[in-house]
Image (tube, rainbow, N blue to C red):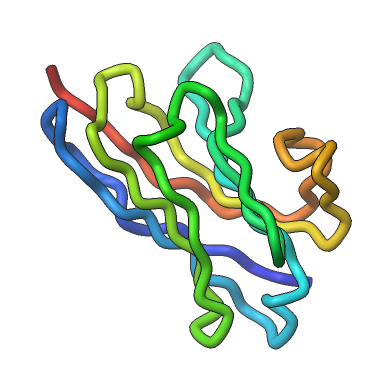
Amino acid sequence: QVQLVESGGGLVQAGGSLRLSCAASGRTFSSYSIGWFRQTPGKEREFVAAITWTNTKYADSVKGRFTISRDNAKNTAYLQMNSLKPEDTAEYYCAASSLITHQNMGVPGAYNFWGQGTQVTVSS
């Protein structure tokens, strides 16, 4: 079991930056892959980025602007978001799973632990 808590969301102008954090409980954080997803009302949850022990993966819409990282010593994963656009506005969720492969890194159903979400709003 792992519990996840996101933080770092807020209101930012277009072109600005935010860093989201995903703090995890438990002593086996390093054995989990972490994914970031986002969702807006009425739409399905959308993959943003994921990190395993050795690989990272990004949605095309955020490549070159967002960076996912993790600090296993702090049981925390991060999503650095630069050059934010109004279309990045969403509730952002982190998720964890010990069963992630390169093929399913971007699939919400592959993750079995989820945080409560943090709102990111980008104004134009």
